[in-house]
Length: 369
Image 1: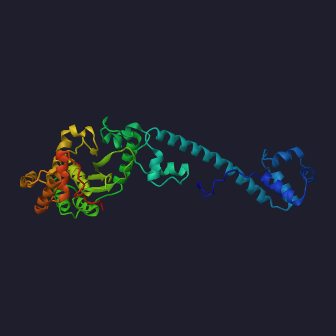
Image 2: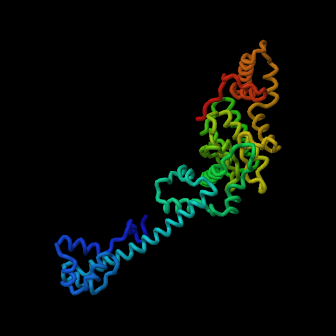
Image 3: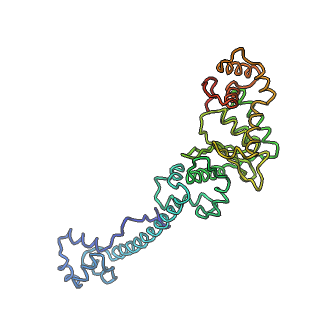
């Protein structure tokens, strides 16, 4: 790391006495003889050579006179030594402060995982701590600030095995990612409904991609971002309100485009109906007690209805199958769904969910692309 003067901080400071010792050795002059030669007590010269005594102006002049090495050179070596001693001391203080910061962070979130995701592992401890601090507009070590900015935006569930440190790390990564983008298109109430209709239509036409999803949401003033999944953090989607725009965050925990469409539609319901000053974010997590929250149930129903309205779904089911064999029923549902402009994989997925029968692998959802 460079100091403010851009002089590199060495591992250790080189005392000018070390330079003198090497110089005498190269010239074959013994220390005692040289002490007599320049009129200095042998013990004083030895202490100087061992770095126990600093260079004085008078000694620098004697060294210049008898060795032919300019006085300014010796004084410059001394100044450099004193500067490096101070810089090393300052560096050690900064490193200790950085170690203390990292230790405190490790009690709250997975700091090593955060460094890894931000590709900061190869930096020195001081560099990475300075960089991580510069990324946030709040104090990561302030419980109140962390709760307000990050951790307070989701509800904990005792029914799911969550690594709380990893969960906070994911939320921190989400905060960073969501504050990177600024849309120019304003968001207004009702835009989420328009986006939901377009996304559901593309999903049923099997032309939905992450690019088309992002383009659609952005066009209506809604930010779309992806944050990598983390171990024991079962987040599927998350919505919040940042800088006047709704933000939908997804994780791609499953390589399933139909599920991704459902998750985004679910969050669009929250954006349209539930986000407020009191409810600044909603998070969709696997198998949580959110199923008892009426707002979560409403968001699920919103997504279901946009993908397959009840009247269409009932009409598909009324067609019936000549066989009671479940695999044939699935085939009939897929064929009738396609005839009515509904994706077979979406229809079959709904049938499997409603009947709790998952023994067929036919009509799989498209992969995320």
